[in-house]
Length: 193
Image 1 (tube, rainbow, N blue to C red):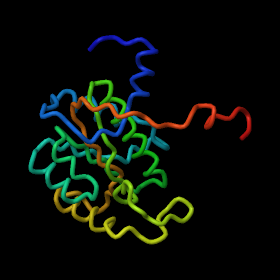
Image 2 (image 1 turned 90 degrees about the horizontal axis):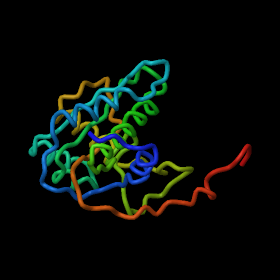
Image 3 (image 1 turned 60 degrees about the vertical axis):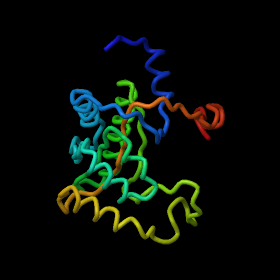
């Protein structure tokens, strides 16, 4: 792996996008191990490390995930997926699992992969669907949440004491969608809001 300058590293992080189109190219096992190794090194409250990771490379299993997760049909074309799970033995399981997921996204990009965070603890992500929100959460329960989590647990023999934090698709891709992000000046405040 080539050595990168600080500026190259920062630009790589800024280049992370949700990519849903992948080339038919496998990911080497040592690359996937490296990505999960980075995930397990994420910050964790009181060092509890509540996470578990299922790396999925089997085409049939990726296809099953694509059927289970609404809006995740593209994962069947990914070279791999990582299911991030957490024990609920800490009140910070969601934060810990999210930090691990972010490390997956960052380390995947450093390995030249593209990724997409597909689903999570609160259910599948609906893009362009009208879901009424109340203070940032759905006003009514998303009907697919319980079914999605139970179907994933059944398909991958996930123990009952684990909860889904995220599913991340991974693969090589030529897609580089633009990032429509708010300007730094709009989100950064010095010493007070």
